[in-house]
Length: 624
Image 1 (cartoon, helix red, strand yellow):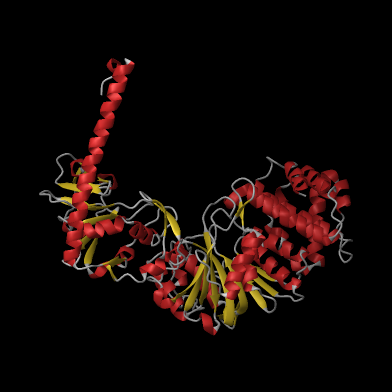
Image 2: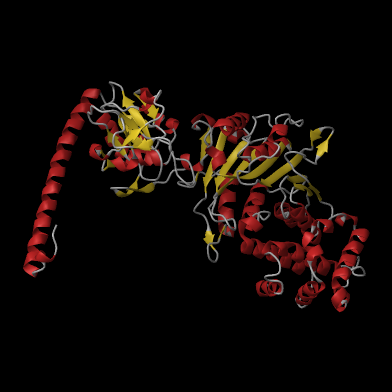
């Protein structure tokens, strides 16, 4: 079938954008489907259209007009398919000649053909052209978790209708059926979804056009219509148009807080929750950033957590979508949780649970879908894969799965693979860092503050920390235009500095210095009180345990980052200060001794090399 699809596509390659093929293949599939249906075979005659040759364009338009007249379901559908108006008769003839050569005996074969064609078109055109196509394996997983078998299901960003179609097929397999409702802002995608659902056997669906945020179509008595199930694959971090109009939302959708203008994830999540009935369940596909970003989104998350509607957070692999490697998550909502799951959230870390399919293509296999579904349904807690977290244990409303599902073994720089037994850590007496230290942020240098040899201030950058030490002689000087609040960033002797961006964490203790020294924005400064020795803290931060705890607190996909709160809440052991000081005196003395011995051995090795080069007769050729 794949070869046949691409043979058809080749007939128009270079004449149409790949993304436009979706319209043409959908109409082609519909005409084949209707020609095999005894109710409509008289209004669709592909062979007659082919015989029209130079008049094939007019014949196609007449056929579509007849379909609209005979089947009210398609009223206005073909008007939204602009490519049909652009095609010349010769192009139409070539396409339908290839289509008529494909042997599709039954309606199911037509459905399978169109499903495969839309998948291939999305893969070929990438995210920009395939934005209306949710990966099939994500649809299968979401519907397997929701398992809607009766009642209504709604998708406010229906795209090509893949999610709704998967839900209906799931119900049909269980000898039941669903009432399908959807809305789609892209008129072309709306038209394709109408065709796709019709030929799949659902002629009763209600898929409407429109902007679901600014003009939701399913309204009853000035309130949103309520559904038993909602499944939405929301646009990734979309900027909201007409944002001001949402502030006075007549449907009270933003009960949990006003979403961010620049990241629309929680606008769609809020709409999904407002569309659920009192016992409803929903899944919204969202990006990782929506799980941890602060400000407005952080407040909304905390309020939704307090409402106890989040049943699970499932992290999925990157690379599932065509044209983007962005990893996504399933947020599973339930307005009527089982008693055993109240005030808890099940976190499932499935980001490594993928199968490679061709070049740069990943999918969730049937086995992966089954494992995730079973884990959710039966509430399984599996080491390094899933765990329940009580609301009281959530860190500042952060729903990033990496914060709660921790690996047992990680690669730690300087130590290699390290295994961890976190149960043993519970037996260690610890205290939060914020109770024994004050944290302060670094200075954002910016472009207006220039590096100058006569600058008053020296600013510590990432490159100035090497092997756990601050390379004072390398620190650059800057002239700072406005230094009114510069004292907030000034470093003092014995301050501990910790890098907060990137996968490799650096720490150092500030030595005594007479000049003005500032911390840059890539660090967090830590000023210990009299209960915590700075060197003790630095050694702990550099330890495998310290690195493990900090890296698991990081958030962000492009550049992992630690927040101030992440560091403040770090648990550290705290023996009496006298023990810390004695411990560090011994440690530092031994460290100095070892470093001197390493330097001596390096010098000895270099001397041996030079002697060998002399014996080779090549020493005079170069100088060191």
